[in-house]
Every structure is written in C-alpha cells, then in structure tokens.
Length: 353
Image 1 (cartoon, rainbow, N blue to C red):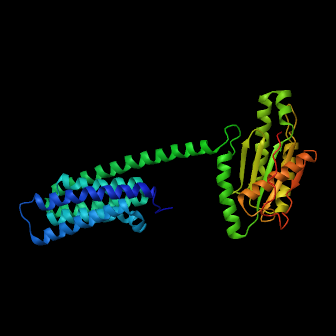
Image 2 (cartoon, helix red, strand yellow):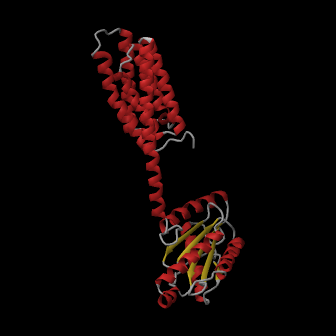
Image 3 (cartoon, rainbow, N blue to C red):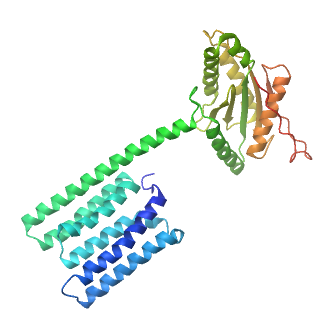
C-alpha cells in the first residue's frame, strides 16, 4: 500500500530511542549552552523536551497506547520541531541541520518511497526558510543546495539497501516455503495456507476443498527404474496438479515423498471434476520410462465433511485411504460425519505408496 508502515516494531524502537536521546540534547543545546535565556525560549524548549521524553518513554514502555497513525506522522513532527527550533534560534549551521538525518533515515527505512520523497521536500523547504532568513542570499543558496543534495543521497542509499534487503528476504522466504524438487509449496507453507483458507471459508460461508494425492506404487517405480525416474514422476504429478490450481488463492503442496495436497476454494462437484482433469493431464504425458503415474485421490470439503482445519485434513486422509483400499487409481469422496460422531470420528490412516 502507498502509505503503509513497514516494520512497526522497528519504527517504534526508532522513535523511542530518538526521543529519549534528543530530549537531553535539546535541553543542553537550547538552554544550558546559550548565553541568553529569554523566558519564552526557555519555556518553549522545556515543553519540547518534556514532550519528546514523554513520547519516547511511552513508545518504549507502552507502545500500544500510541495511535498507529503516530508512527506515520513521527518524521513530520520531527521536521516541524527541528525547523521550528532552527528558525527561532536563527541557527543555519551544519550541526543544526544534522538533526534532519533522523526523519530522512526513518522515512527511508519504514515508509513508502512517496512518503520518503515528501519528507525530503519538507526538510528542504524547512532548511530554506531558515537559511534564507539568516544568511546572505549566495551563502543561503549554496548551503540549501548542499544540505538538500546530501540528505537526498543519504535517502537514496538507504532506500536502495532496503530494497535489496527486501528482495533477498523474499528469495529466502520463497526457498523456505517451497519444495526444492517440484517448486510447489512444502508442508510448512501448506499448514499456513490451510489455516488461512479455513478462516476465510468459515467467515464467508464459502466451500473449501482439500484434495489429497498419492502416487500409486511409487516405491515400485523407484526400485524398477531408479530414483531419477521417480523424481521425474513426482515432477510430472506436481505439474499436473498445478493445472487445476487456476485461482491465485489455490494451493499445491508436496508433503513429502509421493504425497501431495491441493487446496481449492470450490465445492464438492468442482473438486471431483478437478481430480478427473488431473488424470486426463497425466494420461497425455509422454517420455516417462515408467509411463504416466497412477494416482489415488481423496477429497474432503468444508463444510460438507468438516468444520475445522484438522477435521478437513483428517477427512481428506480418510478418503484417500479408502481410495487405496478399494484398489488404487481412483478417487474417493469423504463421508459426511454422523451427527453423534462428528466430534470424535476417526482421523483415518495414510497408507504408504
């Protein structure tokens, strides 16, 4: 999203540490070091220091008390404070402008690119107001350009590093959630997707089909043709299952060995047709030494056969076991639970290939 906050916990700590560190610094530089201490200035600086210390302590100890919008507004509040103090004290020195580094780094790390650009624009305007009211025109122009360019380059470098880190994290997450042989999801990713899908189905009253798949006599394929051909058979099955997972929310996963699952946001009839389509796709496969692999398939649908993720998984497993017991190479639909046994029905047993 355009204005979404990234890493709220990191942003919270950044605000907390800045405010707690800045409060005493502002007090020393604003009240103790200057030779003159006008009362309006002392009061303004004291209130500013108190505000920063209070916000910092709250962000560190009770972040839940602070509205989420604050973490988006924090750099703009910081810009207003820095520019206001610099303007009031007529301080256009390089040391005063260094305080702008914090909102620049904060926006580059935690806000969108557009928000980071807006932060830079406001900093540039704030410094221009101070510089042109304090220095000669030539000196102010030179100082304004130098500060704007330096802070812009800083923001660019930090944003580039953030984007690179995001890409690397995405690659690592994809590798952690994908089966290395087939590229489909692994057990970990499937468990997460199943939980989310069941929540979606129950909230909206929508059907959700879980299809469990085993390759028939897979051990025989490995023993007869070798593990290389066995790997090819697994890849062929994974590609066939991808064909029926047409929607973006549909999930194909390999749980291990020759065991696959497909999660479709559809009803019982369409799930049965999807199973038939997988067999048609596999029948057209050529060039596999063992021939097109046969499949045993079990289907369970929420809410027809289950009401929770665990029940749906168990019902699909039980249907798969029934398909294997009845001769393999077929599809079995889960049985609706009897009213009295719905809470304690058997979970079924998964047989090996």
